[in-house]
Image (cartoon, rainbow, N blue to C red; front, side, top):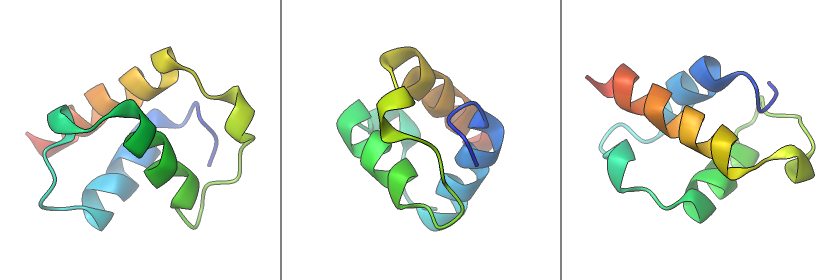
Length: 64
């Protein structure tokens, strides 16, 4: 998975952290959680606020 795979990342995070409200997550924690996913294999330096926001918004959509 790459940073641009926001939907797949959101699905993985919602499965790994089912009791977490994604709207309350800090971007620093979100970044760490994405990097810790087993199937994630992108360069950590390619991440920015817009990417993290897209992942968070997709996760919020998935949670609803």
